[in-house]
Image 1 (cartoon, rainbow, N blue to C red):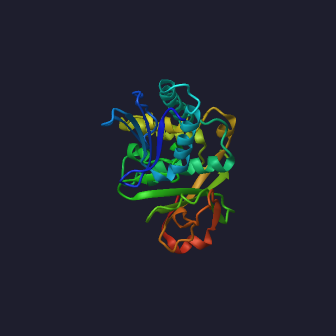
Image 2: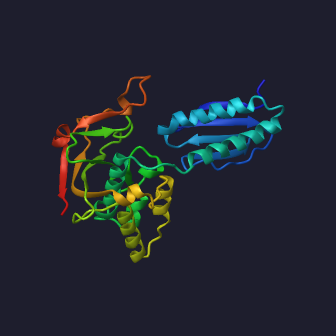
Image 3: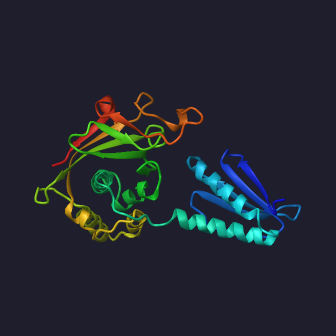
Length: 291
């Protein structure tokens, strides 16, 4: 009795795909850079709206979108209204998934952000421009890993305090990329007057200054801060200072102690875990002492 036809499956490249079929020509919506949208009329004069997910790691949320579209169009009195609802529903999801985050970061989240910004400024600019380093900084945009560069793949950053003995991993996908690198930064809370101390506003200003001096656009950088809902005027960010004293790089081989999504039994999901700092020491490839 549904006014539209829904097909859910995979395309020839084994990517998740949803096709909505009807006699009414649909709008061609803009959903996400991860979803390829196509609209075409087939030989039987039926219009097809095809949504293909190009990154299978987001399959669960993609299928929830399909469920939502199917359920909310089922009650439409006719095909024209159902087709219009499809466009409205996709637009709602687009606005939801690009909505600005709210609230103040926790202390550990702030420590992690300081570590990532330090890597943007110092570590990843050894072999590329600051602008390119920012383009490869994907963590704030919601991807499982913090950085990706065409030359050397994925990098995950973890900032820990001086007394921390474990590195926390937030998902089974986070360390599930071939030959990726785990960067562990020692980032201590310090007094504002300690030499080398940085707060979030100061390190953000350094990134801005470096971009300006090189003539590069600060648009991608501002986009990432906005996506995290960062208010640099918040007193917590102004009054909390850190110092980065060491960075260690670890290569994730098959023997690296990690839980990977590709190796989980069916039905196991939303995995978080911790790895002992001592356990990853044999996989260390480089250490930088920061002075």
